Image (tube, rainbow, N blue to C red; front, side, top):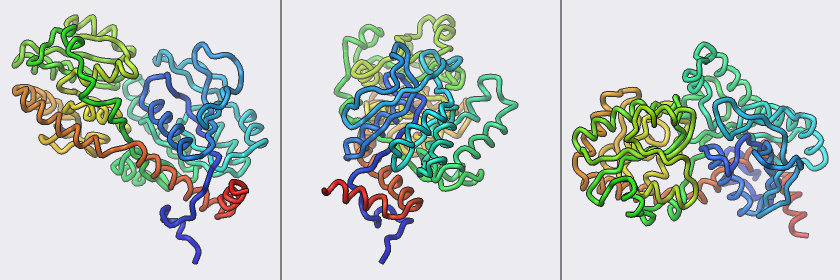
Length: 411
């Protein structure tokens, strides 16, 4: 009996695949897409697949086209230009002919395209030229971001362009079932869920740092309110400011710490000199900042997922957020955090004020948030993505590609 190609679990395994991942952003750049792409590339490599990472050269990198392979990941660099308004980030140029030659010499089994810029469009066309199966990732709600950067009139056109781009691929992966239903209803084809995980050792209450809290002016009984992320118009931080003012009316000793950078940082510091803005943090330094907080405010209305929600919960912080994306998937209201109806600013402010009244309640909600996060591992997420990529390859090429790979590996 032939395998059921609609069920990834029923398909014969592939010992090793050659997978190209094309992305405009990758660590050490700091954003949700870069974070997710690192886990995808490293996770697939750890599972025995040969990964080719195609990305723009980052600031300070040489003009070489390739970097030495490391831990199963070969990096191919392409030219890029700075993204206006996103200091430190670049978009890749449309290097169709370079990718066509690269994959003509050694075609991957599949190309995963994470971003919809010029590089992503070039990669999709080059893969089609060589009849290579493709999967695209819907990682950013560009149509919602446009409203915050003077492009609201183009929202419909942006949505049409995104739909056309993703429907040229063999499947599109999204972070939540909610977004899958939304995009499917808007005419996107073959949409599947690529969830998110969290490193519960890196993001953990164990990183709590009393000395760091002291620099914020907090002792053990004080309330440290935290936000982590880009400080920019699309993050709706005026609402976080208003919510914190309501919290401080009830708890005068409370402090607000905004970890991150962006075009709005200078303005928010100037208008609120009492706010603590230490800039962007990474690694263990970020872990200490998360775990040293008590309550996490996340007022954004433009998230595709919101990795910071999961990181905050893993660090033992209850999150106040609107009821969509990661918050809808992870938060049980008033048990391990709080969610509010989309766009209800008054309810968001009231919830922040209410939860902050009792520090013991904050800590109890935080403990339950941590328990929720402990069940969400990146390993399980990557296994699911691997199965979906295998399904696409089988559907496009039959089982021969995987059989040939297994035969070569067993020789």
